[in-house]
Length: 111
Length: 456
Image (cartoon, rainbow over all chains, first blue to last red; front, side):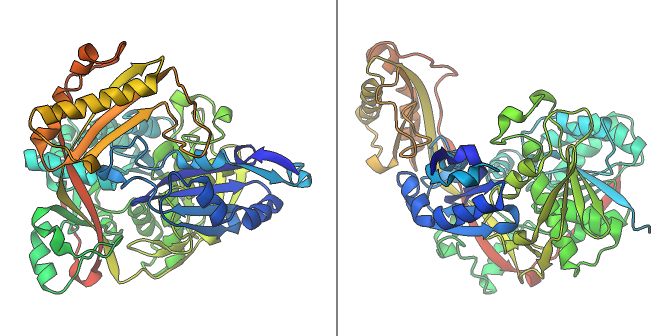
């Protein structure tokens, strides 16, 4: 196992969805996708964003794009015009998830 | 019609406030058939509503007429048509201003259409009394709770009336709250003669619209692999080469900056995505899990296989309502003890508002210490003692005078507070209206979109 930042193995982007945000991340290989699908669960993501996301985390899979799409409910302190926080649109949540560290089998990183 | 026909659609504006260089460079630096301008977002509609309240001739993307002026001669010469949801909540005012700019340029023979029918503000009583609930889509609340505060109500309309306007020979189509993808669906339905029931093709065009709707965000902008992106200032805006069968290539003009790769395009496919199998639009439901994407050459990404289904029987509605006021001020607080000082300053400001005889309840107060890891709270470890923080202090509420008092007491903390406060610029902040956003659904049967066309 190698401990990596998701940023080193994945790309991502985030934006607002009402009072919540979405975080989409994707990887380059099918093997890595399968590994993330098994290990990057909603519980793991909820714990990572515990101080930002006050609601539930939902996950959708897009194997065709080797991508996972997470919906973080209630993650914008109200969101849109209803809050004064700096990132009212969740633009940084993608980079937030990509800063997570995770143990990944060596052989998945060689490709 | 040849099966090899390619239609090039380019998006020149990713939001209201995007660079005016976008449209000019797209028409001058390479081939384009249709130029779209995507201006609208939920907050944009709110801002336009505020502007119309102050000036009946405002309430649209004021940038648009000037941008048309900068490209209209080239567009006429090359036969490029323009489709824009620049009309906001006042398409007829946008048309008048655009026509004036075209006339100033001495250009004649331009047919301009407006697509209307999305604005249901005047019909709200009739619609609600007729049995439409318009309940809040997010939390199910009853619209009665905001009914007397509603300032605008617009339906997210689809491609149909834009197609009709193109069939009448429109060179420029200005819409109200047409969806971003509708601006792309419409010209392709018109050019390829697709049926409005050919849902796979409509879904494919919807995906094109989604990819291009934020302008350069699919050509290297906002891309996590940013260190590979070259020539930022000259980043190319997206151009899509669409084929009869709905497949398409995402590209940009030669010799522009940025890059178009599977990674830059996939990033944008995921932007603001909800349930990927049910990407709801007025014209179809697109299934993002069917998208096939491949690198087809340098700065060329091929997309195919998109599946779609019939749309729902409802349109989404965006209702805006008056929801009090907000104010925000910033001060830079230097260390040592920057965090402690910032809290002293914030407390002092709120106490002084109280000494003026106003009360801002605790739950309406806002204090954020930028520099203490506010963006990545809990995600990465915070710096315990930053050398500087930016204090963002403000409040929300119904009492405008109380909020403005906070604005008055911001700067005085520089001379009567802890040492070294700096970076105060731009004068006293003032309270501004908060426009609430209320998403709802409405039966499609109640909405008739139509177009008007005239020649400039």
